[in-house]
Amino acid sequence: MTDVAVKAAEPVSLKGLNEDWLAVIIGLLVFGLTLVSVSGTDVLGWAVVTSVYTDLSKALAPVSKAYAALGGSGALLATYLALLVVLSAGVAALGDNVRRFAVAFTVLFALAYASWIAGSYAFIAAVTPAEQQKFGISWSLKLTNEGGFIVALLLGLVIANFFPRLAEWLKAAVRPELYIKVAIVILGATVAVTAAGRLTLASSLLFRGAAAIVEAYLIYWAVIYYISRKWFGFSREWSVPLASGISICGVAAAIATGGAIRARPAVPVLVSSLVVVFAVVEVLLLPLLAQTFLWQEPLVAGAWIGLAIKTDGAAVAGGGITESLIMAKAAAEGINYQPGWILATTTTVKIFIDVFIGIWAFILGDIWTNHIDKRADKARPVEIWQRFPKFILGFLLVFAVSFWLAAGSSGDIAKAIPAAASEANVFRVIFFILTFFSIGILSDFRKLWQQGFGKLAAVYFVSLFGFVIWVGLLISWLFFAGFKPPLAS
Amino acid sequence: MTPPDLKDEMSQTTAEPLLPIEKKLIGWSLGIGIGLLIVLIAFNHFVPIKL
Image 1 (cartoon, rainbow over the protein chains, first blue to last red):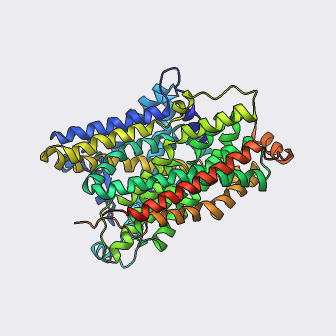
Image 2: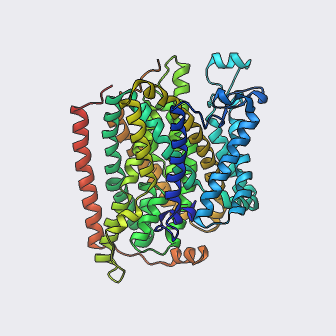
């Protein structure tokens, strides 16, 4: 993730394109094609979906019945080819080696989607007693079929830590930042359709997302910077990216603020490696804790995941797992929540935090170049735009168009939008799977340990488990406790 | 710069004392942050989430 993140944070390349913009283009392409289906022509119905199964031959199918003739295998092949073509074109536009990417992506997609299929096995995914009965099984892990994300992450971790050569070879296609940004752009449609159904609740949640900005930038950052400087004796150059990585949004923030204070490039990159490793631990741990202790407060859980898990990929994907786990537990208790609200809360919190990265980086850059390192070239306001995460523009555009169509258009179009959004959601899930697997691949725990970054990890550990998680929980509780998602009709 | 270089650098670096500007940054951030949170919590109390 680190190398990719560096590229994403750099100014736009000579060709006028970086990974951030590429994510916007791919996300808008998927969204644009799903909008075609509103007019009655289903152009993405061939995309593959996986159902919970005991008979593998029944696991896969095209998302639309109009493409039933393709069968599950045909839909999987079509999905793989479409992704291969689009992503290879993107990689070519970025100026990277397309051939290497295409070969590595083929293996990456195969392993990642195999994990997803494995996660949909009924003994892993079936949730309710009715489902267990349907599949003729007496027990299951009740992870929902989104447990496949965890399987993908674990498989990635196994490869990274036990098959380092394979992990290294796969890295040509390991682009978690790109995958999650595409997913977030696409997610804009689902969030908009969800919000259009309950406007007042959505606007209330939106306002409360503002608390996340205050918490991440003004409280977390200040405390962690102090801990790093005062308790652990780190220099300013290390402390700024470290505090930003732990408190704001992981990799992107570490890179952006590291660049702003003119830190050597290797410093934020190494901090980013640490961020990814801790994000993996959190994504494995926090959704299960949320399911156990916060299942009666789903929106608190959603906000908490957004505030506690760093890196966009892990946080938003963690929100998806949390939603599945909590909805499963609630369903087992006879409560059926409308899907989308927990993930929407996590995403709102995360997007709000992301929006201000550029401004915060500029403030730090201004302080550093004017008061601390006066020899460095001065911070310029244009850096706010340069460091602004562009995929957020894609998310907002998709959200705005979908919202307008769902809430402000004629009856037929408004009725067709939820189906179109759910078709787009198929690709969101696939990009999530690729993200999880890629994060796992990048998490070589041994390598990090060998490099002797135990002291950095100690700052992260103390800050995360001693402060960030608990303050995040407190704030989430203060703002969201007592309010539940609407019940499914 | 390689990771081993950075490892050595981290073990050898002498502590840099907090400068007044850093103390100001930490203090102002926390002050404004806690103040804004109190305002938001009050707003949340008087204008609760509407279902």
